[in-house]
Length: 301
Image (cartoon, rainbow, N blue to C red; front, top):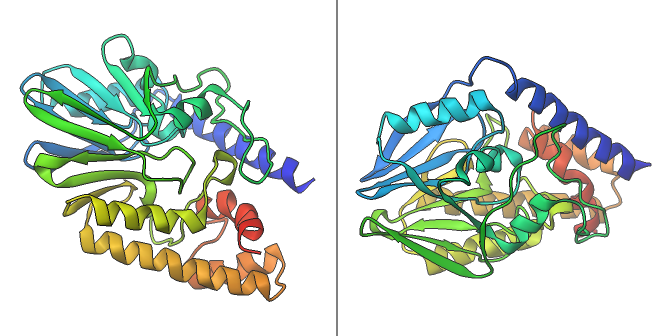
């Protein structure tokens, strides 16, 4: 019964989001220069990275689905460059990061990890804890899957610049890609690093193969193996390398607290209440709570 209720909740959230995205009012977006030729576009879904080269543009992620959102995204891109988008990288499969994939496929190469593409295609995959994954459902407009996939690492070269995508391990999902801009010493982490308003707490999609234990291991691998000083998260403001390390340590603290409560025999409701109070991680303020708590109870028991 709990599993069915969670699936119904996820579907309800998706339907509400879809309805909002399909309104005639385009979402408000802002574009900000991060450094060099790298920009960030906020609003209307996950943070998008825009990288400008002399031969075209590279995007990381593609916002929510819907024509108004796509039109708003393109309007922001055109304030920076008139050149076409040649590549779109997806950090993971969720529709607030892949919604406009279908709009770009005819003119750009859309790239993701193999697992992210499989997750986009539908529920013929079982989660790490046996649940049937609930795909990123919209009533009539699911996200289009990537046209090119990789398992470990891939680089593209455009206008004399390199963009590198790499899989370090599971975290938010089982297919998270970190996108690296070597010349700018910057990365886009997708939702492995995220901050929604004042709420703190990791977002782990257990039905999509995520793990709060592996999340910190994966992020520490990113810190150890890439030379960067700037981080574009999946949601929230741009941070630096030190800010990312602080985030990782915060996730570790959160996980330790949650594990202690679970192993002390606290119920899911009690764990959620305590973590909500201590980390501003409640169902009324943070969808992370609704996605993560049931799987957290199983992984940390």
